Length: 308
Length: 273
Image 1: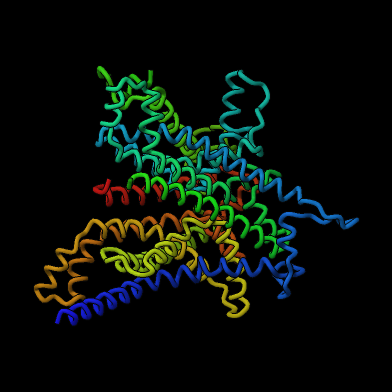
Image 2: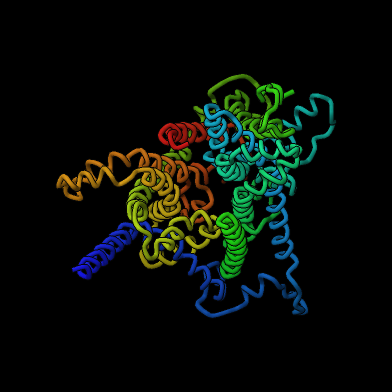
């Protein structure tokens, strides 16, 4: 009898599992069709031969992957590291890193500020930080463009105040891209830090003060170690989209200051080298995956520490 | 100075950190100043972007008369409505299947699948869809809005899923169990109990996906065929040419739509914060 019951229970669980999968199926199929599945095709395309007018020819070729890192001289066929591609990769990583850093420096105090408000006003501050997050990325970039243009608000007011005579050239520089990306992605840094901060128990801080810690020491030895997962999550959330940024560098960087996203787009537009574009896209995906794995490792380690 | 204003002056504040409030307030200012300037200049009477020549609705009128803008706006709305309906439907089902249940085989895989659009850079997905849909187009000869709707529906799924899942996580099974004990069929339990309780989550999910779809630039830019501009891609195209305050006017309208939808969303989910 007991055995029969356990069999019935197993049967019930099995049926429930099947129902769970069936319910999830439409979402999975949709995502397989229009999100995950096509990524596999990109990998396939990166190993094919480019067609003459865009598109591909169904012939295997490793050339695209070779071109990601190396360049062949047109005249004497010498092979060298592709300066153009490498410098764009390097610049993208640098700019994304710088953006993440600035977002952290600005975002951490902001999250801390929101989390230490009384509960009633806290929601309002939180709402204020969420609003820009949900508004159009293109519009926010465009707003920055209008501010920093040579005839933009900042330059105009500086000139009319008599501080400068000539407009400061800010647009179409790396700095413009960093300003734009910081502006656009700052909420992504604040929100996860706030989420970690919200659960923080300030009695620890009180205990620290009781033991004669300074404010700085309280921050460094008590608050920061506990908030660390939030800080890392925020950094990843800013770094990943910065690395994949396309709109911001296109608008604020002009034609010259490319990032990987623009380089990829170029291969599908003017460059008409789809396999190279596919190979570059896969490369970007790999970098992002590395960042995510790094993040999971760290968060797992801190979870283990908590468990101990 | 600023600290004095915003930190309650007490004998000793446990939470005080030097300069934090100042940086935070600067951040809030910096987040809103550019958008406010943009909206402000949309009411400019002159056609110079940054020279204030008086108040007028001229550019709003101009934008609403522009046929390209009209078409793009209608297209944006059609895509956003269809995509958010589809993504909310599949996300609701998925949320019902993955929450309030004992851990089951493949649950993690489903989570990763659903959240995948949040992890992969948009440009990579855009390129992938460009290639994939180009293949489909050669086979089917179909060039309609279906591609854009499908693509939008897919990347909206995680945004619809998260609030619905959050709502479900906060509901225990006692009501459903009680109804079951009173001989309600599973369908009746779902219709009369689960659905009404879940409704705010579903609406919140639908609104988020609507805003996300309405704002999308990159994937739309790659997937659209000629003449299928949405408002954001139309604006992106205009930015290459001479910019007039018309762009500001369109931006302001889009901002207002996002603001309204997100505010409603916030009111719906407020209890959770």
